[in-house]
Image (cartoon, rainbow, N blue to C red):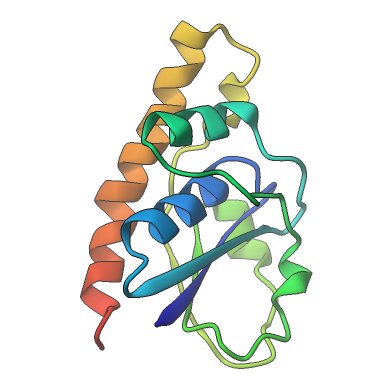
Length: 141
């Protein structure tokens, strides 16, 4: 089983959504983790759209990338925001790093559901359409 770390700034929306979706849909070939360069708290709307997809949110929490720097079992690091790509630290073990930009729904967090939820659902769709194909390609390489 390959292991991927999805990295963004706050580890509140995009990377959390990607972690949960990868662990739900690709659990036979990938184990996902997420972290932030400046971790905050998990966005409740991120959890809401995951529940809409029938995905468990048990145990999801915002984590610092420093928890992962000394791990030697990571196969891939995916940055999903430009800030994380620019500030991505050096890992103890050399690990493949790629950038797959995903739009941040967090700025819409304080908006009414009818404005915010479509942005969070778009994040779900971007994970499926942009990250999943890459992981499918790498799963047996």
